[in-house]
Length: 80
Image (tube, rainbow, N blue to C red; front, side):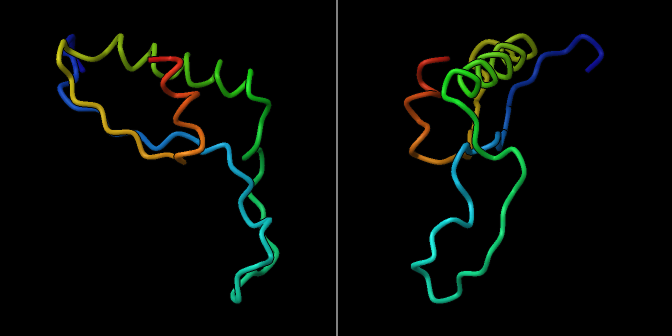
């Protein structure tokens, strides 16, 4: 970024949810995503590292949009 800081960050980190495990939907078929679920402590450490790096390259007041599962918002808020 040639020494400049980001004014906008848009990120879609791993959601840490079990994808394809619910068989209750009529269009369900067996699917999986590798490494989609990890221990809470590992996921917290991952988010902490990712958002620390984002903060390093962000200017003051940088708008940050995060797309992820609502069930992990508490983990995200704990690293903010």
